[in-house]
Amino acid sequence: MTFQEFLNIAFSPVNTILSVLLGLSVVYWLFTIITGLDIDVGIHSDLDVGADTHVPDGHIHAPDHDASAWMHFLKFLNLDIVPITYFLTLSLLITWLGSFYLNYFVPMPTWLGLLILFPLMIIGMLLTKFILKPLNPFFKEINHKGEASYAFLGREGRLKSTIQDDKIGMMEVFIGSDPMTLMVRSQDGVKLEHGTYVMIVDEDQEKRLYYVQKSMRY
Image (cartoon, rainbow, N blue to C red; front, side, top):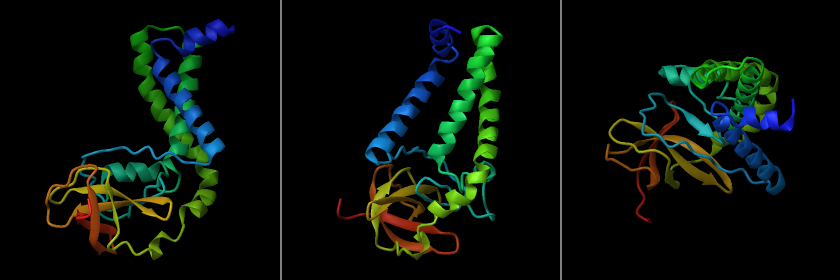
């Protein structure tokens, strides 16, 4: 394969988005390695999570009871143990490799190549799960930083999703320089927009769910 052939396939209509995302991932990891800083790439959503979860440092923790199908799926992929940045990077690489070599050895119409991306993504996520599984003990060690001993009542942070009524959302707080993401609900059911600074005023320790209201300092 010549370099020109590589570029033609890597930046074909089918693979361009994957190639750009993979390039951004490389830049992210190089920046992280060089500077030692971990960029928080938040996924903002107004979806009703439907599960009581606790997400410290990019991990997703969902109890077995009262969990939605989505949270069960995340646990199936071991995202309650594996940091999501590791998982996304590896699954993206596997998907890109599959699409690249498939288009190299089996030339196909653009529409078919795009259609095949979806099963390739699923295969990539499943392979990533099994590839990272031997590292689960390591991820468990770096995942537990004593977050259960922290007293969150009275702490302030920023909402990463909009909450209202019984909808559950995400809130980011900092323990020193360490960012942590908690699952929260509006104390009085009042609508609180994404980006609003709020204060934790109550908690459900069993479900690890925190109740918040708008911070008066902002």
